[in-house]
Image (tube, rainbow, N blue to C red; front, side, top):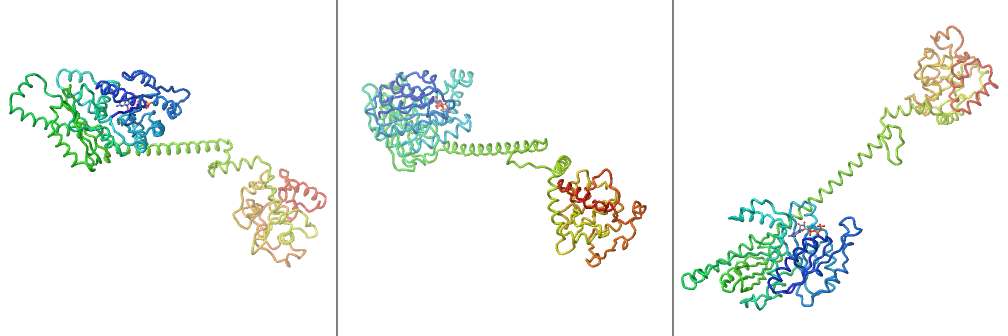
Length: 624
Ligand SMILES: Nc1nc2c(ncn2[C@@H]2O[C@H](COP(=O)(O)OP(=O)(O)OP(=O)(O)O)[C@@H](O)[C@H]2O)c(=O)[nH]1
C-alpha cells in the first residue's frame, strides 16, 4: 500500500528514515516520508531522507519543553506535507517515541490531517525502556491514551522487550563475531537505536509493501493480499502487534542438485518447508512480536508469508491460518503470500489487531498510577514541610519579640504570657486599669451609702459622701462588699509589701482574687489575703462579708473596735487610737493610692484637690 510516513521527534525521525531506506532498497517505492524535530543534530544525522523531507523548528524563546506546541508551527508542518506527493496514498503513518516531548504535537497534527485527508491514520508508537524512569513511562501512558483516541490503530513497538532481546542475542551469538560482541560490552545508544529501528523497519516495512510489487524482484502471489485488506486489519482503534520471523534458506549448488535428483528428498523437502513456515509463525507470535501480547485477546489477525515462491509452502501456510483463526477472539482472519524472487530468506508476518491484553501497556499504566501517587505524596510532604517552617518562623518571631504577621496566630506558653504581661505591666502607664476602675467607681457611687454605713470607722459627722471611695456592687443575691472598709484598715498601716500596692497601683489586677464576687475589682485583694498583722483584727471582719444591719450602723457612736478584739498590731497598740482614726501618711506612697479611685489619674488629681479643700481634717484614715 502507499503510505505517507510522518516522523515526530528523534525516535520518529530515525524510524521513518529507516523505513524510507527499506522502501527504496526494495524498489517498490510506495512511501512518502517527512521528519519533524526540534533537535537539529537528530535531523542532520538522518542518512536516507532527502533534505526537503526534514522539517526543523528551532526552539527559540521557549525555555522548557512544556511549550513544544508553541515551538512547532502546525500550519508550517501541513504546508510541508501537502507539498509532498500524497495524491495516491492509502494511509498515513505517524511514527513517534512515547514519553518524548515532540509527541505532544501529535494530536494537533492529527486534527489537521483529518481536515485534509480522508485516508486512515495509524500511529507507530514506541514504548520507552523501564530504565528511562517512571516519569517517562507515565508520560508514555498519557501519550498512548491520547493517541489511541485519535487514530484508527496504534501499532506498538516495545523498546524494553527488544533491547533485552538484542542484548541476549548478541551475547549468545556463537563464533568469532559473538565473541567480539561479548568483549565489546554494551553498545552505544546510537548503535542500539539503529538495531531497534532495523527491527521496526523489517516488521512494518514488509507489511506496508504487501500487495505492492515491481517488475524486477516480486513474483505473482498465489493468495494476493491487497492494501485494503491490510488496512482493514489495522483499523479499529485498538492496539496492534506485529510478529515477524525470518529464516535463511540452505544455500549451495550441491543442495540444489541433490534436491532435484532424489524423490525422497523432495518429499522430505516439502514437509520441511511446511514445518519451517509453522515454526516461523510460532516464533513470530511468541518471540519476535513487536510487543508481547496475548494472542487470544486479538480481535483480528493477518498472516503474510514472504520469500522465494518455491519455498512458500501452501500446506504450512494453511496450517498457520487455521492455528491463528482458532486462537484469536474475533472472527476476522486475513492471509496472503508475498513471493520475492531474489532472496535467500523466508519470512512470515502475523498481525494481531484490536488487542485487549498487552502486558507492557498495563505496566506503563500502573507505573503512571504509582508515579502520580508519588508525586502527590511528594507534594503533600513539601506542603507539610512548608507549613512547619512557617510555624517555626512564627514561633521564633514571637519569642524574639518581633510582632507576628497579621493573621498568623502565634503560640505563647503560659510562662511567656505571664512574663510578657509582667513586662507590659511594669512599663505601661496604668491608663487601661484606670478606665476599668473608673467604671467601678461609678458603681461605688451608687452604693456609697451602703459602704458608709457598713464600715465607717470615723465619726459620721466627719465623713463625706464624696470622699471618692469605691465600693464594688453588691454580690448578687447577697451582701455588698465594702472596699472602703477594707482599704481603710490597710491604709492605716505602713504600705504593705504585697504587689497589690506596687508603685503604680496596677498590680491589683495582676493578683486578682479568686472570689467571683470581686472579680470586677481587684481592690478586695488586700482584704482577702492581708499580709499585715493589722488586718487580723476588726478590719477584716468589717471588710469581709458580715454586713451589719443599717439600723445598727446608723447609731452615731458606733465604733467597730468596741465590739471586736483589740488589734494585735503593735502600732495600733501604741497609739491607742481607733482604727478609724487617721494615721500619718506614709511618705513613700502617695496617700491617694490607698483608695481605689486613685487609679484614674484625673480623678486622682481631682480627689486630691477635693480632699485638700473639702476634707482637710479627717484624721488620716480617709486617705485610703
Ligand atoms: N526504537 C527507538 N526508540 C527511540 C529512538 N530514539 C528514542 N527512542 C525512544 O523514544 C522515546 C522518545 O525519545 P525521542 O523521540 O528522542 O524524544 P523527542 O520527542 O525527540 O523529545 P526529547 O524528549 O526532547 O528528546 C525515548 O524515551 C526512547 O525510549 C530510536 O532511535 N529508536
